[in-house]
Image: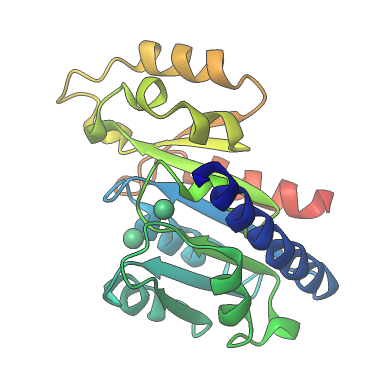
Length: 216
Ligand code: MG
Ligand code: ZN
């Protein structure tokens, strides 16, 4: 039965996620799993974060992609602790892929780890990787209907980022509509409006991360 198979896959994933979480905790590493559709700006956000926090923390990045290493190449200019996972067509990262990637990082030296998931708003959120925080990034040029079309990722995220707010003046993105829909799905998560291009909201994002790290 198909349902049974899915349950088994998720149970198998959960075991690896628990192992990852224990290993990451032991090494005192705060982990953010970053989700979005393709092109929303995950890599740009990670680069802005590295620019702001690399003096203060040692930061690693795990890059998930179906193929290619272009995002990892971009990140390499800002940190040496980058591991690329090519999923070979799979549309999400799973905890066992992360377990392998963690072996390639010097965990004792890291304070903060970003996992850039495969660009996809559907299944990545179902796979616990061992992270502390799940953040979803939605961008203005994708339209204001993403919370309506893909509720689970907004429901299960701890932080919701609206990127490319510099584009608000050009399109017909209805920000009030977007925020209202987000709030109806998840009124616990903080929502930050940012523009990686213009730097808007990046300070708030940096403060948010540091506050979360200080809590743990
Ligand atoms: Mg990217
Ligand atoms: Zn998938």
